[in-house]
Image 1: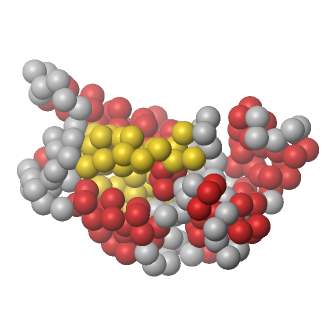
Image 2: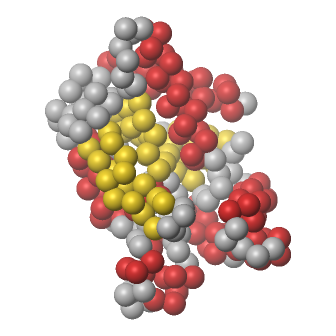
Image 3: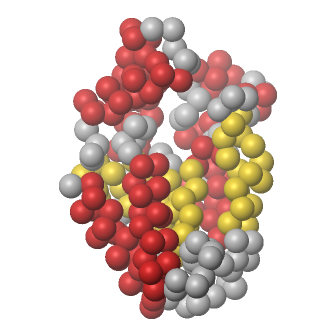
Length: 228
């Protein structure tokens, strides 16, 4: 099922690209609850679009699509400690209010500006557990940008302001049972929890609070992809 979805979405983007203004970018926001598969879908579609580009333009070395995670817009731990909701902010890291939403909006604005220019985006350093500024280079030749993150389709400013700038919004509709198990395994493997019990508590606690916000406050999306 996933391969068919990737193929369909990739060819859809390719058709949009062929019809688009050559000075403009196609910017897609891929939203979903934590653990729904956003990064997987973004990576696979990005790779497939680049394959289609290479087939059509075999002498062009540059890749035309890139996937960019929202993780780089996490507030730093130092900044979270300055918030009036300090204890809640640190405990709830990953909730919408613990991200630099205005910074994300500015990135989207830069990406859709014409003519397309080189844009730098932040990433997340998992060893430092903090964002790394200007770590991802999006060249002027990059025509398709797949932005993936929990809040790409959140119906609350400035997230919704960023969403309005994008070409399309896609949403992965994954069930709680699937994402809870996936997140618990991820937390345990990353070492951020001590044992399986703590991993499950986190997946069904803080992560689920964020998921409820995402599901309850989602904008209409052009594509709703079944969870995988």
